[in-house]
Length: 315
Image: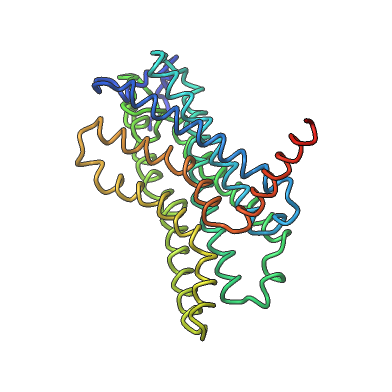
């Protein structure tokens, strides 16, 4: 970029993602339902982990962080989408747009890294059961969670830092449902090749590297389970991984489909698929944990029994 060039930063951008879709108000209502599900379900799981002493374990530190990220991510995205399109507030200031993009991608990165953390927990629990409490203790898990936050924030600071150097002297219309990184930098009228490189390189570290680690972890877990003599013991050990496997599928499958198919879809279909990939995991992750994890189910039953006993005592 020419050092003498004046950087043009517009007062606002216009988000036009869902424009022109017939009966789109029904889709906003669907997003609202998913958001309410996400807040209620994630709130319940967070409360269970906070108040049940039996869940104060390294594994549930990572689970708590995941449901916290899911709830905050949904709260950052869905109300803004509904306000933008349902109530037709499509203008967003330059600084708010960059801030929105930063927090959206930090939380997306944390979801991916957190799934890798849970995979690490299961890997050590099954392949090194006798050393599990030494390797994976509370201090280790808190340190790993903190490291994930630092990586997420640093990566997105770099990405947004390269947005600041761009000059927007043409269109200010963003063809996405939020201040999406790609559609945003493509509006620039100066050289955005560094941003193009960043948008290619960063996903390798925040999405595909964690997915590769998860796949390798489960290959090692599969090899360890194959050495277990009893089929019942093997199934019991595998069941402890079932909830995590479902979380990985529900997070990565929509992203993989979107990355591979979205370019061939009509613009509106691609935007809807991207938005679904963002809102479905937070709504269904806690439901999977409640249904698939014995400790969570037991904790929920205890909480419901206490509430029932309290109502009886008040009467």
